[in-house]
Image (cartoon, rainbow, N blue to C red; front, side, top):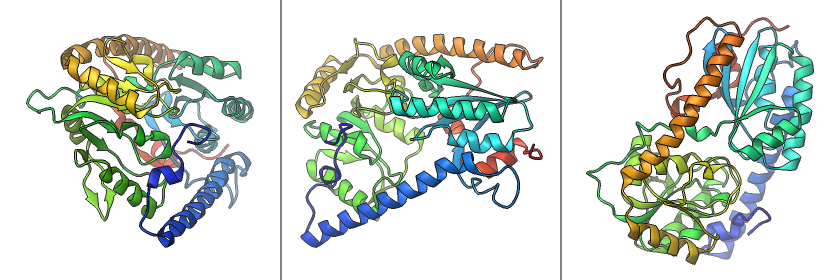
Amino acid sequence: MDQDRQETFDEMVGPVGSTVERLWLLATRRAHRTANKLRVSARKRFPYILPARGPLSDLDGGIEMSAHIFSRDPLVLYMPVGGPRPLHPLAAIGRRLAARRATFLLMPMWTMERPAIVAQIGRDLAWYAARFPLHEVIFLCNNEEERRLIAGVGGNAMFSNHNLMISEEVFRPLPDVSVEFDAVYNGRISPMKRHYLAFEIDRLVYVTYSIGELTPSAARAFIRRLQAQSPRHLIANPLVDGLPGRLTSAEVNHVYNQAAVGLCLSAVEGAMYSSMEYLMAGLPIVSTPSLGGRDVYFDPDYCLVVEPEPTAIRRAVDRLRDRAIPREEIRGRTLEKVHAQRLELAAFLSALLRRKGSSAPPLETWPFSGTEGLMRWATVREIAALVGEPDRA
């Protein structure tokens, strides 16, 4: 384990076939990490140092970000933020919308419960406010501690966990699907997901995918490690050249319905979409203690938080599996909590639109269609064009 209680690289890839292969994996890992650090370092600094005009002004235009246009008049954008300098996509798009009144609703994808990150946010908010006085920035925080920390450095912050955005129409119980597995774990190929904690579970299905945190060769070694644990452990994703392909949301929901329990095994992340997906599908949850806000909708009647040890995880899974809590009960009690907080957010958004000069009636229905619609990634340049980029101020 490293200092953040993540798996080390060696623990992730497990035994390899030869000394040469091991040395190759280590060398490519180092090169991959160095390249990523350089890329991220440049990306997060560019928006803060580039000129407003001239040939260098668009060097940050290729930064990838997501922005959902909640309202065009007044302009309100919903944006996920995260990483070591979370506000860099805001700075990049803000430069292009400097002449327009705009409101940005920022959704933390990764926990802000880190002093160094919060301090950087405070400095970047002050920088942003001085340069873009026509813009308002509001953080929708995943838990009260995150809200308190961001407010403490001058941020306009409210509690509104991003798992409100999960669609209950997509993630739901499927009564005609048989339970074949004791547990399901939806976790990408990443050290922070700590897949090893599930290795003692008897019947286990994984939903996994790569976002490039490991090189392809290391990711293949990780997949082989999962496959080698037990013939009763299955990867639900189709494998293409040894790497997992993506599943649709409907296919993921079908996998959930084949399992008795959902797993949440990271120590630190964001609010973890899959935790809410499990609950909406009617699955009880076994989780480790964590930062990030995934436990906001947990209920001790069907969510067990246990120590990050494989034996403790297996025993908790067995307990919840054997209790056979009706799925509609878990889903119904979760949706009661979700609906109450959706009403609060809808009321806040209605008031925000009125304050910005909108004559539209108050929101009567939930205005978000689910995370697939909210998390469409594009370049800053493309999003500015979609919004309607005015001349630079």
